[in-house]
Amino acid sequence: MEKAENQKNRLFSNKDLKQLIIPLIIEQLLVVTVGLADSIMTASVGEAAVSGVSLVDSVMVLMINVFAALATGGAVVTGQYLGQRKHVMACKTADQLIMFITALSVIIMAVIYLLRNFILHGVFGQIEPDVMYNARIYLLIVTASIPFIAVYNGCAALFRTMGNSKVAMNMSMLMNGINIAGNAIMIYGMGMGVEGAAIPTLVSRIIAAVIMLILIKNRNQAVHLSHHFHFAFKGYLIQKILHIGVPNGIENSMFQLGKILVLSLIAGYGTSSITANAVSNLIAQFEIIPGLAIGFAVLTVVSRCVGAGDYENARYYTKKLMKIVYGTMLISNALIVLALPIIIKAYHLSPETAALTEKLMIYHTLCCITIWPISFTLPNTLRAANDVRYCMITAIVSMWIFRIFLSIVLGNWLHMGVFGVWVAMILDWVVRAIMFMVRYIKGKWQLLRIY
Image (cartoon, rainbow, N blue to C red; front, top):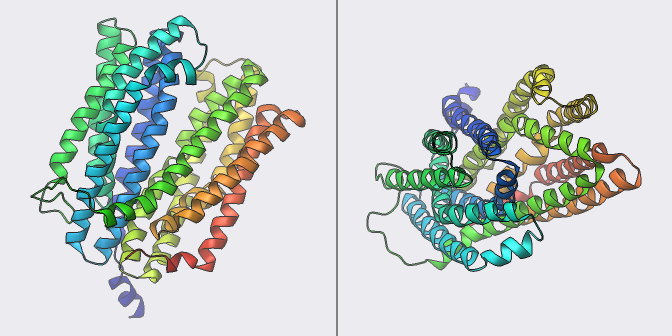
């Protein structure tokens, strides 16, 4: 009887969680798979095109992380209002999120266009003329898509907050489908160069953003854009969004910076290490897909619980979703390990590089199914409860001391090479896992709700 009563008080049924999680996993799988296919098609244009695109994408990833962080901030605040059953405030938050993220993205787009020569020559430095030519073309075209990817991220986050991740999944399928089809037509069919990779990216993002805006205006949804949309910023709501979004954005940006610094370190270890690291990183992206996807679900579910002041449910769903993360990652990682010999063979690696890649992936897999969920999925409970500053400080300090400094110690000083860099990465995970677990158990995150 008591168990039945507990189930009755749950905010999300097993069916609700399934409908939330499965589309999220498919969406993340699409992003990684399409990114891989995109890079393969661009490679057919030539090495200069690949280099130019990768340089510009390193800047674009930083921009997208900013908007993803702001979208997360808006989603958490909206979710808390839904938990409080304040649907009008949830919709007002949605208005402010889309308006603010659009305005900011237009400003960033304008700044990039104004500083394009500094970015191309100052940030990228001395690069080959043909690489510079391709980077310039790609930058000029893809920069125009910044407001649209920002709006798409904002709308997708709002749909996830409502527990409707299927919309974001369908839009991801459409956007990526247009991108891949456009690349195939323009690169293979029309013989275009880097423009053939850039134009479909722009077009797909425009279409996805417009459709998402139309869908989010549906007034039959719990969260929607107001019927009479007023272009006026409400400071108190923007402040709440930024309270979550800014620390999250700083954390994500610093993480990307750390990856770039580590890559520059690996570049000194030789071609075999560079190739093994690149291939291993591609495979590793597939191993963490379930954790990334369910991390979005944690934000959605726990923010709703926090808004309702129901921390018993917040802890219940955190434990339940963490169990699902471990189960799904165990299965997916096992399948990848079984397929590893075939995957490595497909890359036509030298025996030395293949052996190093296998060593890195076995090590990563073992740590991925044991440490990664606590390091990266669990802290989303803290973020959903507004404990973002602790997450940011922990992640940044751990990254600089353990991931970057220890990479130098293990990789260079102790001559462990690229494997030492990966050991340092896992030590970073371990420290994060300990710090986040202690924070979760102590329960201070339960005292930080934004009203």
